[in-house]
Length: 203
Ligand code: GAR
Image 1 (cartoon, rainbow, N blue to C red):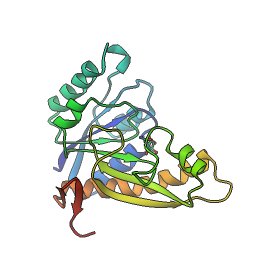
Image 2: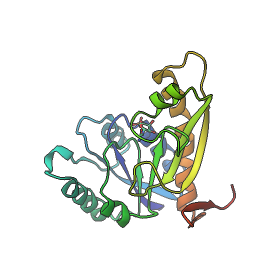
Image 3: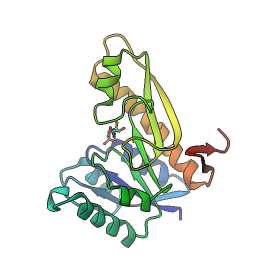
Image 4: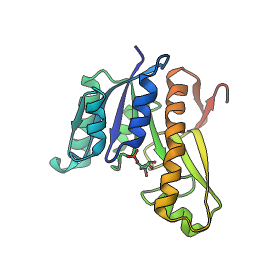
């Protein structure tokens, strides 16, 4: 039995799939016990159900404000005895109160080398800037969007003629390696946060 982990999604859930596959393997120190989506039509919910993992939609439109939505998510997490939360393509901003209550127990993956290109259109920004190297970042979540102590980064070369589609496809392949590794680092107790930075034993 590994650390009880929830994954929050909004869409396809390919990172969720990578986390499902790696945590199901023998020797993993994490166990995915809940998947929550803010969109009922997210394919990731189907991925969870196929893997036998409890999955539920909590549509944000059902709430009059962000605090109400976050309270519903929080209640679902606590009811399932969740210890650690992974945001995986979860496209809603979370309130500072929610983020603080999961401080150093909530991870996010972002498709750029943070602190560059924060926000929803990271690949558009990277291509517009003409960077030669892009990538992804797994970090601990802080209230300000796409900030927080960095656990792992993966590199993706930007190729001539790259579009948002080709760059995001190649970046996802790297994300699928980085996110499970970062989760494993967290649950094996090898991460310490000091002065706003994550110190990771062994890397
Ligand atoms: C991933 O590329 C993830 O890094 C990105 O959304 C995609 C979700 O794909 N997240 C963000 O842009 C957050 N700012 P997936 O649903 O197939 O995992």
